Length: 64
Image 1: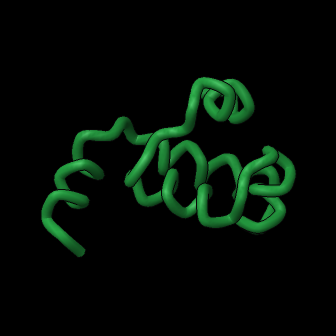
Image 2 (image 1 turned 180 degrees about the vertical axis):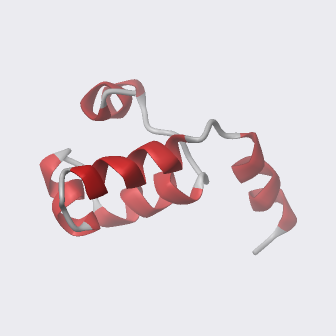
């Protein structure tokens, strides 16, 4: 993974832990979680890994 992506991931808020906790508490797979919240499976992975943060709409959907 390029260093620039690692630096970006390090600067993002820790939404990944929240996303992971939510899908576990809701007892959903990542795929089901993505469907439930109206985003794609890769988007969930990007949030979880800290490469991007959810948009304002995404943040409202997950309650962040």
